[in-house]
Length: 259
Image 1 (cartoon, rainbow, N blue to C red):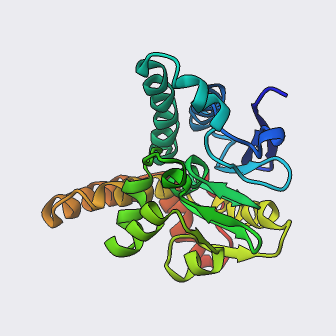
Image 2 (spheres, one colour; image 1 turned 30 degrees about the vertical axis):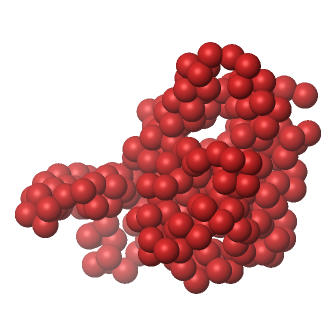
Image 3 (cartoon, rainbow, N blue to C red; image 1 turned 180 degrees about the vertical axis):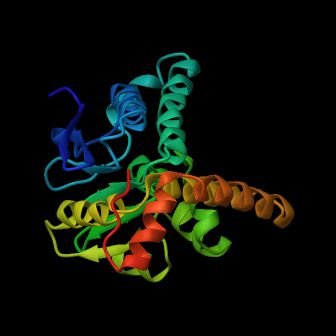
C-alpha cells in the first residue's frame, strides 16, 4: 500500500491522517510534500481555524522506513539529503503556520514521528502511546528538529538521555516534563485533539497567530526586541475587528463571535 496523507474536516478543524498502516505509518518523501501542500492550503483558507495531525489505525508514526533508508545507502548521499530536506520543509511549515497545529498520538511515536509531534503546537497522547527517539538504536543521529525541540523543552541531561540512550518514555512522564499537553484514554486521542481544536477555534485567529509568532521568536530575541514585537502585535490586534468584538462581548457578558 502506498503511503498517503488523508484529509477531512470536522467543523473548522482540518484533520490530516498519515496513512501507511502496513509500516506503522512510517514517513517518506511523498508524505512530506503532501504535508507542506496541505498546510499551505489551510493557511490561506479562512474556513480552517486549526489543524490536527494523526496516524491511521493504532499508531501515530514509526518514523523513517528502514527499508527505504537501507536502499538509500546504495545511492548517492544527496538522495537522502533531499529526502531530509523534504521532512524539514514540513517541520518548518508546521512551526510557521499561523494556525494551531495539534498532534493526536496513539501507539508508536518514534524517530521522525516523535520529531513531527514535537513540531506541533500541542500534543494529545493516548495512555498507550510509546515515545522514543530511536535514531541511536540503529546507528543514526536525529533529524526533523528533534535536538532543537528537546533542548528547548528539557534540561540538557534529559534531552541527551532520550536522544543518546534511545529509551522509551511514557506520555505521563512527558506530560510531567511539560513536553506534551494531555494524556487521555486509549483510542481517544483524536477526539480529544479535535475538542482542543474546537476550543481554540472559538478564539480570535489573528490573536492566536500573533501568539504563535511571538513564542516562536522569543528564544532567539533579546528582551528589548521581544518587547518591541509584543507592542507591534498588540497594537495591530487592538485595531483588528476581533478586538472590538472581544471587548464588547466581555463587557456584555456574552460569547464572542470572531472572524
